[in-house]
Image 1 (cartoon, rainbow, N blue to C red):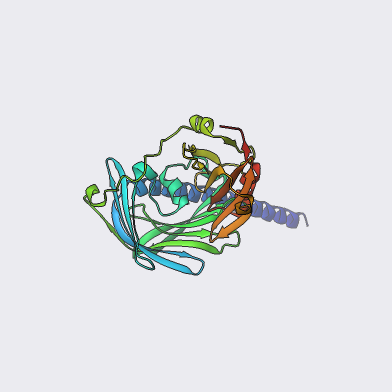
Image 2: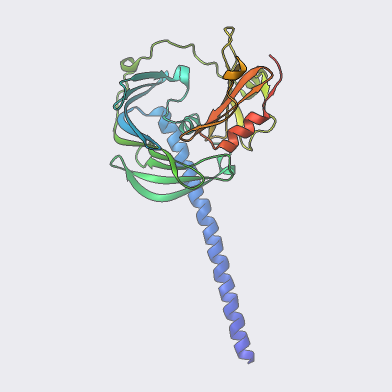
Length: 313
């Protein structure tokens, strides 16, 4: 009996040792894949700004599908881009980073291109699921899972050779794909030719602000921002009565707040509206029509909108 108890005790010790080892290995594995995912996102952030390319990508939202041809040029003075629609109404859009900042195809990618990755792991779980293919190229699949109800999730296919984003899925809380952007063809350009896509001077350049200057420029305050969101930029209202525009980001998700003088009460937007992955919340505060909009869940725009307080110009 004593020997049997001794054997059972040894077996229990072995099981505990093996279990502890598996837990430790699992923890190290998660930490390793999170570290690799962060490095891939950082590489993608650089590639979005530094590489020149041409290609065709498709954009799907709900049942709508559209295709566009893109020429993206990176040079010493910044980025320039031409987008040409291949489906629906014929349109050509020319953009210049000196006015528009990052030129990536979605608001989340804009934040990555701007290099706002610090602290991202506090609000998202990062994981690399392995190798896959997109646009005929090998890619690493990175899954970004939100830690609360104020953010969407993402699946990102990042080109192994260049770091470019080849495909992205925007995911709802039920893992349903809300929006998808995917290259179907991609060609790298060796010699940038900025003159070929020179943007006409239609808008004045935006003034870049540090956080303190941006806060001082705001006529509004948001005391109950969802955790992790910070003020990124402010465009004050102009002398012609245009809207004040504030941008908040957590490093990946981005939310815009517009405030302008309210018109007739019957024309006011009050409540929640949704189009695909984009949610909006409207309210009238201190005589201003306030609209909060972004590729974030309804809970985020509503919390920000209800928290807005006018502090005067």
